[in-house]
Length: 445
Image (tube, rainbow, N blue to C red; front, side):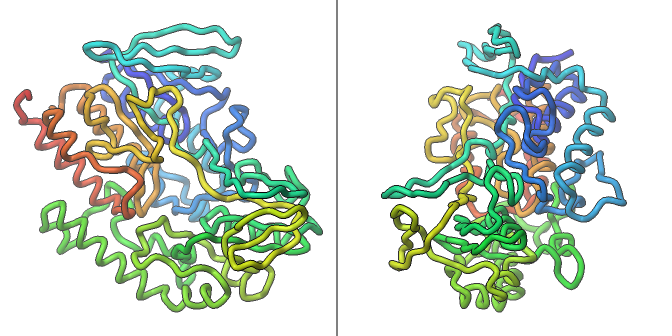
């Protein structure tokens, strides 16, 4: 086989990368600290990093979430459950026959770049034994939904504070029935958990938000809203007139069209949410990741869930909010997201202290030709097919089918992967394919 490649992680992105690289003839090996594949779609994953709860389902439809050569079953719902996603990923591994390339119960402890290229990778097995292996390239596909970001507030609290990563259902790990619950955060998880806990019999549920976001329903006119939008998959065609424009203009016009469409469709809905106490959303709907929720508006209008501003401090049995109001509470449940972290890479290689990375073509470390980041992005569609497209780009670069521009040019073209408006998967897919075409004929730098 070709170059030896280390793929870190066996969640959806790691699996897509491993399969893609091996199909390209590369000697790729995947390393996963858990005994199972599937990442955070495995509820109670033994790696201790799972974010799945029992009612979890995808926020993007199965059409948007599919790999280019592997669909989800027609009989499944538009938004598959976590156990269906796990089954699909297991069947993906078996359909393409690469299970023997996945080394489970193996932690990548440290990846050290070698002078002249390549990596020394320190691995720890299930018995705690350490070994070091040499690789020609490294693909970081360990994701960004595992290092929980837990807020801190002044004061002390008599109740319990949990991150949503620990939540499994309204009774686990904290029995919320008959209790007073404050959920912090109005992203997908915060809205879903607030509604679920209220329906399960909590004494009260309040949802606290520091800033607003656009909250859109999963279904529009009885059908998945996302499937009614064009260009939500990297293999989708770029619609006219966008396809006639250069890349920078495509991106700019897409942002304008998307803003107009979302604002036109959901401004009245957002006004209702604001009237119920949620903060005003940003002017551009894609400047923050929008929330998909069918239930939060009804829950707020019925009073099952009530809105509060940001928490200012804690005061014994009570929580004090930015507007000076206070509430007694038994549980503060923080759906406050995750930090971007690659603990096996030195900060000089991947500095994520600002919760972001600046990469060439969204995946390549600009100062290296042997380090790729797969599966972390801000698309208007699903992450997994984006990860597959990124892995295809990495495979072309590693096999020599694509020759990258100079290091200076890569640095000039590098962009943040998270600190930007959400972008179109189809436009990104087209950009990757266009760069691959240009690179085939590029002279050595």
